[in-house]
Each structure stands twice: as C-alpha cells, then as structure tokens.
Length: 324
Image 1 (cartoon, one colour):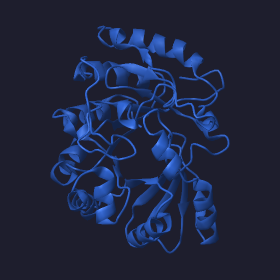
Image 2 (tube, rainbow, N blue to C red; image 1 turned 180 degrees about the horizontal axis):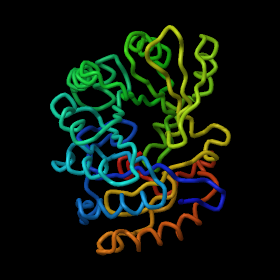
Image 3 (cartoon, rainbow, N blue to C red; image 1 turned 90 degrees about the vertical axis):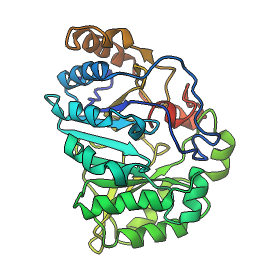
C-alpha cells in the first residue's frame, strides 16, 4: 500500500493523458493552449505500466484527466486498459464535455463508470464568456444524453466565483431538483499565471456551506477513494451538492491521491514542484516493478500540506498542465 510519512494512504490516481485543451477558460488558459514541451505524451504501453504499478500498490481508482482527454483519439483504448487492470475498481474522467454527446457511448462501452464535466455556469452567455467558446448548447446536449442513457455517476464541476455566486447557485439547485447529478463547487485556486484574476474573483466555500446547511442540506459520508469534496444531500432533491475547499482547515489531512502528468512526471501534490520525472521507468519491460519501487521511495517526500495560504502554488502554472 502506498503510504506517506503522515500515514496517509493513496487509493486514487489522477492520470493526465494530454495537456492540450480546446477551451480557453479565463481562470486557467485565458490565452488558449500553447505547447511548452517537445516531449510526447504517454503512449498506451507507458500508461499500462503506470496503472499496473499503482494497482499493485493498492490504488483502486483512476481518474483520466487533461488538458482535455477527449482530444486523444486513443481515449477508448486508454479507458479500456484502465478498466481491465486487476485491482482497479473505478475509472473516472474529467472532461469539458465538448465531445460527450458524440462519444459517451464509446466511453461507457470501454469501461468508464464516472464522468465529471466542467460547467462553470448554467447561464449560456456566462458559460461561453468563461470558456472562450460558443459551446454551451453542445456541452449541455452531452450531459442530457448521459442522463437519458440512465448514467447516474455524473458530476458537474463549477469553479466558485465571487460575482454572480447566488444567481448561479439558484440555477444549479433548480437544475438538480429532478436530476440525479452532483454539482461540485470548487474554490478558485491561485496559480502562477492567475494571481490578479484570483484576487478579483476568489470566494470562500465556507459561506456557501453554511448557506446549504441552513437550507436543510446534510453532509454525507464518502468512500475512502473519493475525491476531496464534502458532499451534501437534501430529501427534496434528486441531485447532490459537493464543495471542494482547498483553503479550509485540514484540507490536506485526508489526501488520498497522486498525480502522473501526461509526460510521466509524478506530482505528489497539485501545488508542489515541477514533478519527479519517472518516464525512464515507464519504458521498462518489468511489469511496473521499477516504477513501484520509485513510487514507494518518493512518496516519503510528500509534504504535510500545500502552501496556498502563503500564496505559494509551487511550480503549477495552470491546472491544464497537470490535470487539476
């Protein structure tokens, strides 16, 4: 079992397969994607080594991330391999939803069993402004198709913004009244490239939590391989609300996830240094044994917490570079 010096166990791998994104969200890639490396992304063989090594060490959940993972043509093959890896019980993916209406059935057939779609607003004009696209109808059509297919392990990710927060909350609550979908509000996080934007738009999730509790929402117990969200349910709603609050007290105490970047770097924290280059171990024909040894060794260097409260986001330039 992967366990760090603070007795935290790691059941959850966030695996980035590309840092390319076709959206230009104003809190992440306001100028759009620009390649910063010549090195290629992990191929399927390397991904097999990663998943085998992590599964051998007790990881049972993999989330495929990007950039935008659906931009890879071999995404169904990657999903299928993750799903077929002994020990992996859950394969999830975070997507902007651009290709969801067209491809969701292929993803599900390959073995995907959880999807998070980034939807920062249910107001079409605001959504298009945030993403730098005209994709609102296309994304929502994909979400509607998932619901129509009876797919219930569906979540919407929405970055919490100071402006328009109450209007967005009202719209999301109306939307999940009769839909079995969880909406996750994520506190805006300060990155190297978005400091001015962060200062202008950051809003704490604690006030939203207090508001939900006052409205009769109740916090629920989550599984040990779940993400960092506090999840709330209400007897009058089919859907749920999640809050991800990285600035809250003891947020890192329950950390259960590690990250591998699209170029084979191990990131012990979203806000750590440039990552540990493990790609040479991904190319060995040893079933991931050498990689496993490296993971066991390096995890002892994981720090007790991030340093966001000190305005230190490490080497993370934007979320697309690691996979959020």
